[in-house]
Image (cartoon, rainbow, N blue to C red):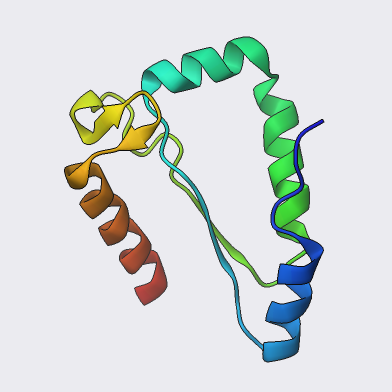
Length: 99
């Protein structure tokens, strides 16, 4: 089974405080995506994530999983960003917050 993210407690806390959640699908390297897609059905993963996001109602989702596709130089290894990748992700999130 896929884990349920974000948690119900997080959703309730955001609702109680009137906070709009910003959820980020983290960038994945091409190598990581290939391995993941070989093990899991991408449509099932997407449906699971969409259901989790829907619990937040007003949450904004940034889907960055393929944002750095074709850019292995932004990853320290197959599943971690390096400094340049982290800076690019930070700019991506900042841009989404500004809209």
